[in-house]
Image (tube, rainbow, N blue to C red; front, side, top):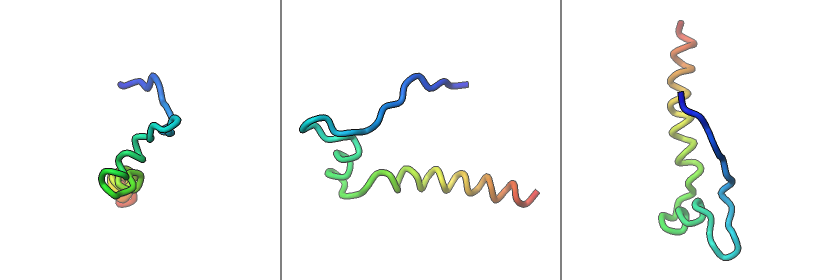
Amino acid sequence: MHRLERMELDLPEGNILSLSQRFAQKTGKDPAPLLVSEFLHNSGEISSGENQR
């Protein structure tokens, strides 16, 4: 079992961009929908499997 030791907000600090801002700047895409879509896709498979039981 894994343990979460620390969680931080991804916020800009002064003139330093946040990680999500840097990702968007380099790729032209917002990282949140890309990350969430994978989570929702996997959880949707699990929940649909549970509904069939």
